[in-house]
Image: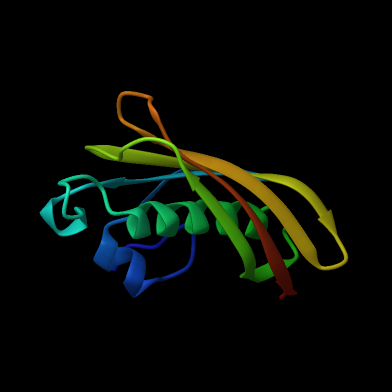
Length: 128
């Protein structure tokens, strides 16, 4: 089972989300859409896009502070802008940290660079 920057997730393995890069406060991940990821229109299902965004925003929150062991999603808002096709790349960035919460933003783009969705999320920090 591959890991996503140090943690195991059978759910991410099932969907096929892979880690691409990370730095403090910024994480990139991707998924290559197959037939199992498509909706009735033949486009990437919104649930796959939301999962990718939840993963990269949450990972950005987790890696913003070395003392953080894990984070939990408190709120996630996703706005769908265009269709998901082929390989979808998600980027999550930390905006602010305060009172045990981390506020993040990010986007998902198709392999041609077209914007698929924007997201903002709030994550609760659990220290190690």
